[in-house]
Amino acid sequence: MRHDAGRDAIGTRGPVPDAADARLDTRLGTRLAELRTERGWSLGELAERSGVSRSTLSRAERAETSPTAAQLNRLCAVYGHTMSQLLSEVETAPVPLLRAAEQPVWEDTASGFLRRSVSPPHAGLRGELVEGRLAAGADIAYDRPPVPGLEQHVWVLEGMLQVTAGDTAHELGAGDCLRLRVWGPTRFRCARTTAARYLLAVVRP
Image 1 (cartoon, one colour):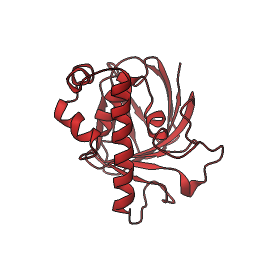
Image 2 (cartoon, helix red, strand yellow):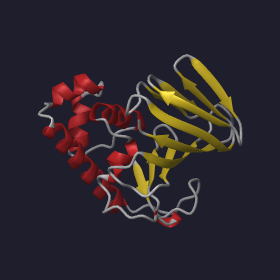
Image 3 (cartoon, one colour):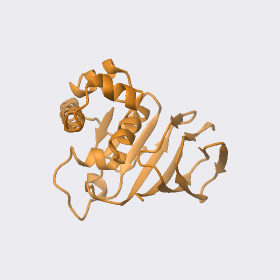
């Protein structure tokens, strides 16, 4: 996982300090351990609930590895958080204004997915804006929403994007917007030879 708040655009990036990444991974691991402990679950119980292996959970909590986007989504579903909520809990105190250069960018290098948190982070937020970028050929499948009934608006800014909700696939081009309420599996796929960039509006029920 990579996280950086100093990029001018989601597709361009400068060097990311390893120390900053390590600190974020440590805070995220600590928060994941706190959420599990608050519920009185063992690693084995959390593994059964989330479908993420016990060894991966243990290493993530000790900041020895970073969860992928799909794994983090499963953990968010178990804890009833959106991804932005979880990440906001390991950031600094909430602010009402977030400058472009300060917006956190999280990267899942394994799947070719970059995620910019456009909205100022707040643990109690209900609505949020997220900018996403999928590299050419990237394919991300989520087996469940982080919060059942989550409302999403997917507005494609550049490229072509295929969004599948349940058994229905939608082909979206630049300027197209898809609105859906998520109850089951979803899939975001960029099958073209160029990257896709989109804005995702998320509203908790």
